[in-house]
Image 1 (tube, rainbow, N blue to C red):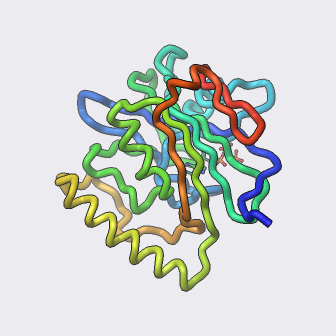
Image 2 (cartoon, rainbow, N blue to C red):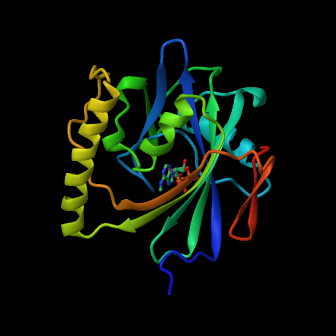
Image 3 (cartoon, rainbow, N blue to C red):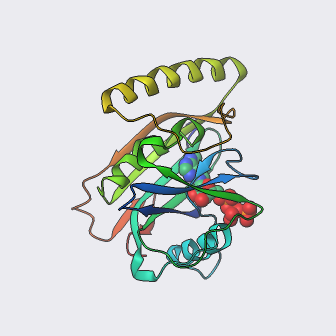
Length: 223
Ligand SMILES: CNc1ncnc2c1ncn2[C@@H]1O[C@H](COP(=O)(O)OP(=O)(O)OP(=O)(O)O)[C@@H](O)[C@H]1O
């Protein structure tokens, strides 16, 4: 039996708020729930009757206190997250927002903070973020991908941490990134409940002008 066989999906959103001039990205520290203790964009489940874009707008206001006009909320990609032995996949619609209105504020779920592009805390984020976020920051939209996650056992956790810290230091050398840190009280990465075991990302969507098929269902790139 395929451990990644899915029978249904939940539709989620993720908004990346970006200040192009300052080369900064607004991330939120998730205080509770799914992905707790990780930094991420702002988003959540799309509610019945909402389009993904409407859901993204609502979650950004709930979690960061800010609003974005519909024309400033742009679809960057769609990712399908699959978890081993879990028949429910997460179809995540990712947006960029280069302009926003209102005052950024903390809520009981998320603590927002700006990060320099060169100091994004990838070791305290979902592992897929380091694959697609650099593409999004370069403006290489849209992307579509499947990301496969396995639950960590205790031994695996240590092994995966060792591999990921070795590869992230190699990446840092290659990219010649500055190591200036914005202030963050977190010195040690929290253990992550899952690790990414595989992924498949498509960047050339010229053959799919508006719809991308996902295992028999269709996700629209339009909203
Ligand atoms: C597996 N790899 C992943 N990589 C990057 N981001 C991921 C993710 N998996 C989930 N996400 C995001 O995490 C948020 C969860 O949202 P989540 O708190 O569950 O939703 P919502 O606020 O509706 O929940 P409650 O109201 O608390 O039930 C949501 O933005 C979603 O896009």
